[in-house]
Image 1: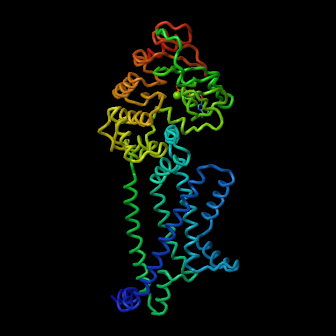
Image 2: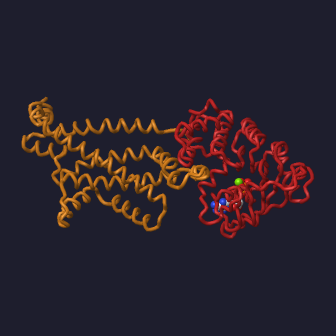
Length: 227
Length: 255
Ligand SMILES: Nc1ncnc2c1ncn2[C@@H]1O[C@H](COP(=O)(O)OP(=O)(O)OP(=O)(O)O)[C@@H](O)[C@H]1O
Ligand SMILES: [Mg+2]
C-alpha cells in the first residue's frame, strides 16, 4: 500500500542523491542570483532613464521609446535570448550565455518598467509640477525631486510583480546553456537517473524568491502613503 | 489714494494689455493692472472669468498670447528672461495647496532654497524654519502633509512661497478647499503678512477679509476688469450693474 509513496520519496526526495548533487545546484543558484541582480540593476536603471526621457516629450525620441517598449513587451523573452545568443556572433559580436540572458531580460524589464513608471509620472497631479515650477525649479529638477519620487512610490506594487516575473525568466537561460539552477538541475537529474536534483532546484528557487516576495510586500507597505 | 505723495512708487507687478486665448475662448481680453509695493489687491469675479489664468500669467505658468508682464521693473515676456530667477520673486499659493506629499513640511519649504538658490542644507533649513515659524507651524517641521490639517497644509504652502523671499505673493483661492473652521487660521497668516508689508494679489471669495485687509478690489468678468476701487466702493456702492449683481450674489452665498 505504501509502495507508491516509497517510490515517490526515493525518486524526488532521495537524501543520498541530494547530498551528491547539492554542490552543483548551489553553483546554479549562485549564477541565477548573479544574473538576477544584474538584470534588476540594469533593467530598472534603463527603464527609469527611458521614462524620464519620455517626460521631455521630444517627438522622435518618444516614438523610439514607444517602439522599443512595445516590441520588447510583445516578444517572448525566450525569443529575445535566442536572437541575441545566436544572431550576434554573426555580427562578430561575441555573446556568452550569461551576457545574452542578462541583456535580454534587462531589455524586457526596462520596457515594462518604463511603461509602469511613465504611467506613474502621468498620474502625478499637474499641481505638483505647477507648485515646483512656481518656486523656480526647472523642468529637470521638478521631474527629479518632485515628480519621479512620487511616481516611483506609487508604482511599487506593479513594479515588484514585474521584477519577480522577469527575474524568474533567468530559467530561460538554460536554453543557451547558462549554468543556472534549471540547467544544473536537469543535467544532474539525467546523470543521476533520478529527479531529486529537480526537487533541489525547486527548493533553490524558493530560497531565492520567497525573500524577494516578502521584501516586495514590505516595500509596498513602506511606500504606501495617504495623499 | 489718501497720501499726498508726489511720485507714486514704481509698481512691483504691472500687467499691460494682457491677452490670453484658449482656442476660440478669450480668457484674458486686455488686462491692465499695476500692483504697488505693500498693496493688497483683491480679485473677485464669476467662475470662468479668468482670475486663475490672470495669476498664472504673472509668473508665466501660463503663457500669455500678448501683452507685457513687468515684475520689479523688468518685462518678463522679453526673450532671454531667466524665468526661474523671476519666479523666486513671485510666490504662489494654490487652492489645493500642492504640497509635495513625499517630503516633510520643512522639506517642502527648503527644496527650492537648496536646489534653486543653492543654499547649503543648514542655511536652507534655518530659513525654512523661520518661514514655518512665521505661519505658526514651527512645531510641525517634521510632519508630512498627510499628517497636517488643511489649514496647516495651506500655511506650509504659504511658508514655501515666503521662504524664497518674494517681492509679491499671489494667492489663488487659498481658503476655498478648507473646512470653514480652518479658514480663519490661513486668513490670520495672510493678514499678518499684509501688516508686515508684503505685496499681495488675492483671488478669493472671503469678503470680510477683503473689507479688513484689501487696499483695492478688482472685479473681473469675461476676461476684462469691469471695475476696481476701494473695498467700500466696490462692496458698498459699485458703479457697474454687473458688479452690483455679482457682489450681492457673493454676499448672500457667504451669509
Ligand atoms: N488649460 C486650459 N485649457 C483650456 N481652457 C482653459 C484652460 N484653463 C482655463 N481654461 C478656461 O478659461 C476660462 C477661465 O479659467 P480660469 O481658471 O482662469 O477662471 P477662474 O476665474 O479662475 O474661475 P474659477 O472661479 O472657477 O476658478 C474658463 O472658461 C476655463 O474653462
Ligand atoms: Mg480659478
